[in-house]
Every structure is written in C-alpha cells, then in structure tokens.
Image: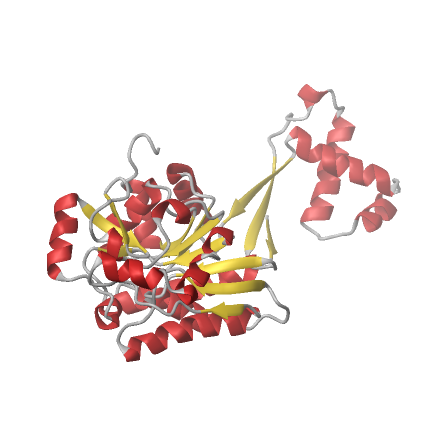
Length: 345
C-alpha cells in the first residue's frame, strides 16, 4: 500500500504470517494489530475512530500500532521521488567526509549546469541562513551569480555582513557583476555589504604588499577571521570566460608554472594539486585574497560547482578539505563517487 506524504512515498508492508509469535503474542493480539494497522494506514482512519469502531480504548489502539511496527507486522520503506537524490548525496558525504551534499539534475551544457546549480544554491541558502552569519563570497563565479539572482528576498535579516574574500577590481564590465553579486546577496539577506577595493591579482609581490598596507584594504581583511561561512566557486587552471574578462586571469606564463607544480584547480585564486594540497608558488605572493589556511578554518565552506570540465578541481578540493558543503550536478556527483580514492571509500 502506498501513502503519499509531501514529496515522498511511504510504503507500509505487513510482515509475514507468524512474525509476531516470537514476541509472545497470541493469535488474537496479532489479528487485532493487523486489523488496526490496516484501518489506520490503508483506510486513513483516526485512532479515535478505530477505537470507537472496535470498542477498545484509544490508548490501546496507539500501543498496538506502535507494537505492530516493533514486531514487523508493519514495515516502512521510503521511495525517493523523481529529481531527489539523497542516496547519491549520502554516498558523497560518506566518501569525502562532507557535512552536506546537494545534488541536482542538470542538462548537458555548461549553461544548463550553471542554471541548475544556481537554483539549487539559492534554495540551500534560503533554507540554511537563519541569522547571525558573516558570509564571505568569492567574486568570480558565474554559478554564484546565478545563485544570488535566484534567491528570494528574506522577510527578516538572516545575515549580518557579506564581504568579498578575494579582490574584485578588473574589467569595468565584470567589476559591475562582482558588485552586483555582493549587492544582490546583501539585498536578499539584509546583510551589510563590504567590498574589497583592490584587484585579486597584482603584477608583482611588492605591489600586492603595498596595497595590502592600505587601511581600507586592511580593514576588509581584518574581518576574514570572523567569517562563519564562505560561498565559493571552484576554478580549474584554465580560467572561465568570466575570469578571463575580469582582468584577474593568470598570464600563460603563470599557468605554466602552476601546471609544472601540479595544479589542478583553485578556490579564491589559491591553487592546489590533485590531492588538494595547497601549492606555495610565487603566484601566491601576488594574490589579494583569503589564504588557504584561513579559508579552511571557516566553519561552513560551501562550494557551488559542477560539470565535467571541473571534475579534477572539484575532486581535489574535496580531498583537501577546502569545502565541507558541495552543491553539484548529478553527473558530476556520480563521477566523484566512482573516482573516490580507496582511503575515502
């Protein structure tokens, strides 16, 4: 018998004959348990109605229903509705030590994946942001833009402060999108927005050091240790079109250095190898952004990323503990499960 309840199917199955005898129940007791169970689950009768019809007390009906489950007369299983993949999410969480995984269906194109992940991230944020958070956001992610565009404004203030955790000044067209990302998130959550008035990548380490000494930039960086959550994308060594246009994309010579060091991806322009180990190269010295160690101390680290192009980078980020919440598409989730190392299984 199937009982539909809010997005899932609960199936109650009556156990085999004699299942209750090993618990010392008489035939009459078993018959009454089965009868009450069918009246309650199949016919949808209330316990008070059952008690009246069978001329027994309502507390006895309640006790017999509970006992019917204990002895196996009623067994409950859950059939997942279409589009829900909690089994895959559980497998991801187990294999990579995640606090939570959110897996959604998406089409085959990059645009389809971006839209699906954006919608899923918006739902996740609307559900889990309940107040008091200080949220850091990386600036250059089409998926994060899709997420904040999909968010519905909260009726109450659910975030105290939102700020950039990597520099955001670059091409004016893309800088507008970075400002819009922070602005939309702030408007949707009631947060106070804090912007980073600096590029994410400078040409020399000395230029970076000089800019970091500026009181305005230093003031933003001083908030980073108090972050309770970060919302980030995961990048590959090859920059996305958005990053290319931003002025923050690495030069080919820098990418050659990173490839030679074994880089497969980055979060906030902090690169790591296939095992998720941070790579300390000269590139690091030119970045204005949260450091790898500081990032991994943030209690809730949410990444929104998917698609086959980013598989190596996503897998490495999980192995290295860069994030503890992953929102991804079903195809990528299945690739990650299949590609989990033996020690992670």
